[in-house]
Image 1 (tube, rainbow, N blue to C red):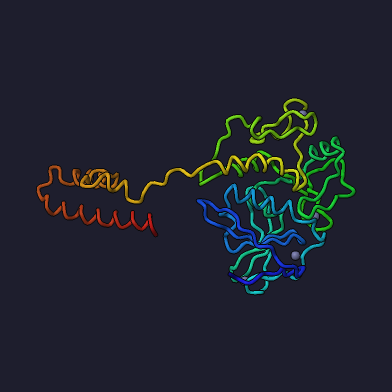
Image 2 (image 1 turned 120 degrees about the horizontal axis):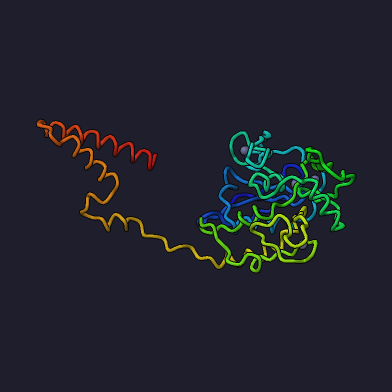
Length: 311
Ligand SMILES: [Zn+2]
Ligand SMILES: [Zn+2]
Ligand SMILES: [Zn+2]
Ligand SMILES: [Zn+2]
C-alpha cells in the first residue's frame, strides 16, 4: 500500500480510485476534485475498459466544482520532480498533459483527458444555438465555470474558458456511447438502442439513439452536452449492460496445439515449409543437399516468425 498522495497544486489529498481495465485488470487513478485533475501512472489510462470509464466519469460527476483556477506548482505525485507539458496530437485535435520527466505518469485535466480519448468535441455555432433554445448558459466542461460573453456564432475559433484556459468542449454522444460499450475486449452491440439507451431530446423529448444521433430526427435539435452531469442518464443505462456481459469462455492454453498433435501439416508455417521443400526437391538430383538447405531456410524462417511473435 503506497502512501496517500496529495495534489501538488492545492495540497488536498488525492482520491485513489480503482477502475476496471481491459480483461478485468485493475487500473488506479488519483483524482483531485478540487482542481479537476486526474493522475495516471505511466500508460494506465489507455488500459481503461468501458466499465472503467463509467467509474471514472461517475467520479468526475461526483467531485465538487473546481477551484476555478489554473493549477500551479504541479509536481510528480511519485517523485515530486518537475513535470513537463506535453501536447499529444490525437485524431481529435491537440490535448495537453503534464508528464513526469522520469516517466512515473501524468496529470491531466478532466476535459483534456476525455478529449484525448475522443469522447468530447469542441463547441460550435450549432451547439450555441441549441443551448440558447434550452435556455442553458454554456459552461466549461473542464472546471464547470459558467461562460460569460459567449459570441452568438463562432467563426472557426474555439472559445477558451477564462478560468482554466481549456477550450470549450461538449460530450460527443455517439463517440462516448461507442467507447463505453466495450467489455472484455469485445465491442457490444445493443439491439434496440433507441429503447435500451434512450436519451431524451432536449428539444421535443423524443428518445434519441445514443449510439449514433448527433441531432434529433424529429425536431432537428442538436445534442449539446456541456456538463459532466449531462452523461449520468447514459451511464445509468450502459452500466447494467456492461455488468451483465460475461467474458467469453477463455480457451485453455495449448488446447489448439493438443488437437493437432502428431499432425505436422496442421499449421500454415508447416504447410509453407512443405511447399518450399517440394519446389526445391522436384527434379533436383542433388536432393539431399537441397533438402538440408531448405531445412536451413526453414529454421531461419521459424526463428524470424518466433521473434515476430514474442519479440
Ligand atoms: Zn488539487
Ligand atoms: Zn516522477
Ligand atoms: Zn474552465
Ligand atoms: Zn427533438
